[in-house]
Length: 396
Image (cartoon, rainbow, N blue to C red):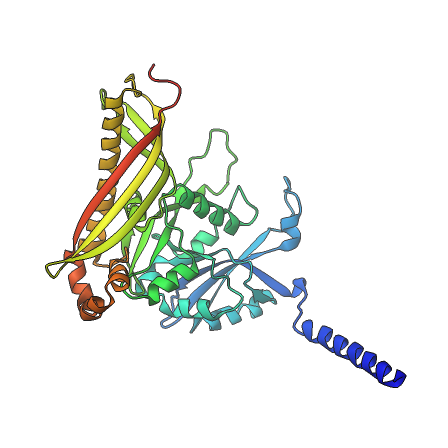
């Protein structure tokens, strides 16, 4: 009995040791890894090649406090490599950095405009298969420049520029001025029926140097501007800021923001209305065999700023402001519809997907003809606005 018990415990100990060894068989030291914080994809100068740029973090330098003097190592290292495929270009970085790339901390994927117009399906295939790359990494398209150039800008807010880009996207999405699209969203739309992909647009802008500013500083900064519109996997154009919010109204992705309208008594003095709650719904309907898309928007808000002398607490004034707010929302939606339906002819609103969910049998009949039907679809708008609070000051 004692021998069998002793043998049992020896077996348990041996198994535990074996499990512990298996658990760390692929452990790698941090010093041997290149921590990728951002990836940029561009069209390479060579034919049939792709150019990949990585922004690698230096963990030792990032942890240290900022240095006012020179001589310190940079917190990030940006390098570019080319290859015949995405994976080929990335694997070649070992010969440059001497480190194996580690993608688990990647924040953003930046696609150059030229590469986006040629087609992004091969890149998305790799990104969807790599288990290290987070599906929550943002996807943006560089407007007018290569994606590599975006990763080379010098951030003044964050030691790692990729973190500033990520924070910028979050802030713009929260303010309902940009579409926040990650890898999961993009691939879902790319592979789905009746809907086409979109992505945030990012570009470099010139920052005005303040008087007495430090000479020789990089005056460029990144800004999120509009929305990149795709047809299948190819970039076909851009939505501007109002058109972008028009798209977000339809998608039900307006969280908050500001709507500026004219004062009822003085059109030169604006009134700012703060969005506090909003919803958007798309409902397809067949009428006598004809498909109609109904869009219903509900918005509630508060009076954020009154630059005129009008008494905004009067019921008639509030109703006028609500009507003006409604017009702004309708104009933004119609601008987005016109651009997507008539100019780009791409269903970024998911009208087809909505038909597929609500009328699967009918969708199977029209699916093959959808690209021809979509530009001439009849769309009806139903927008309701409500101002809840006017504040403590009625007028000045």
